[in-house]
Amino acid sequence: ITVVNVSLQDDGGIEAGGIDTFVQSFTIIICPVNNAPTFTALTLVENVFEVLPGVSSGAFAVPRFAFGVSPGPSNENCRASSAFCQTQSITFTVFDNTNPTLFLTQPSVNAEGVLVF
Image 1 (cartoon, rainbow, N blue to C red):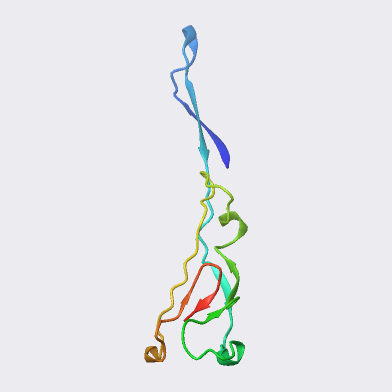
Image 2 (cartoon, rainbow, N blue to C red; image 1 turned 90 degrees about the vertical axis):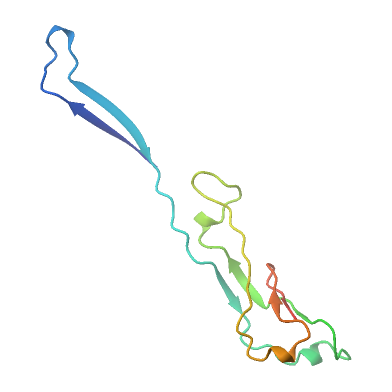
């Protein structure tokens, strides 16, 4: 944030009580650019059946599949919206599943980073 003052002056002079200058102030607010969110994901999910022994069908959940989730730098992660910073939420979208017939329910990742399928 900065306050800028600009003056405008004419060449009429100030004789006889004249005013030849006018000053106007204004504020410039430079807001941060919206940077991409970041996260780290497990690169391989295997042995799910060993993790959940005796389970051969139904839904599976892989906690902490996505971790270190951030909507962006700290100046984009506000506790409350203001003129200088907007709160942001995150949404994972799973796409390009190369073998969709493998799943009864297509994989999804919730905002807490849990992979469910």
